[in-house]
Image (cartoon, rainbow, N blue to C red):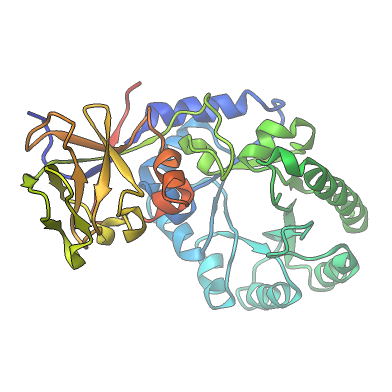
Length: 370
């Protein structure tokens, strides 16, 4: 019988080390590395991940919101932290915890300048984001003169980095578009640095950018999900090892006769003798209803067992008709051999969504083994 009795998300720090070193091996020694650990480390456990990455020597962390940065500071993280999407209501806390905001609009620049004045800080580190085609956040080239004028007028802020974000660096069909983004960014950084009078850190590449556009590493790169071994929407690098393993256990086994139904709304009706197993994980834990009705699967003794009927709040059922197993046996949702992208793609989504949806009530277990 299995030696564990509950649903658990395991985080393998040895795999994290491997991935960090693998991606670092793609860089010139002088290029800095920024580890993106937003959304609780992409749904895993951000504090042990960040502490491990800090020991490995990451140069920067990035989070989405100020509250996430505060968690890291309270855990003892001293490495610089970039906040990618700061909000004015949190600027006081941003300064209190020495978090570095990504400034992406005139309103945000003006609001943070005011906050810096009110807190009597000098040369507070900020990051300036430019939009080069993702069309989500960022200044445009025409804003450069305004930005520099604001900085020179108030003299309370210091530009730590200039950044942009690639829209489709993982998609080889979009190479022309990505190349265009890179060239636009090169022109922006050259103009901005010349106008500013000094050259900040420059970064645009995400994980797939690191792998596919080595000439665009500039002076820093960013990697988030790549550190955890999962590819983006259309790519997966086999040299990256999945860090997270989600597994559970068979609670009970049922035998359905032809005509019997399973679960809420009687969503599954047996047309032949069918054996099902109930697993203690449901949509409240992050396995949403989209994985039901055979759109998702798990592994039982290495064989696919499809999720049958509707996913319930606290449990789901799988078809084990052709899989010899018993109550208490282990069930794998994804692991080092079957990445989260496989399960996600089968249900028409991406691994990002699956991983970040894993709820806090799923126990996290940190391990350090190959």
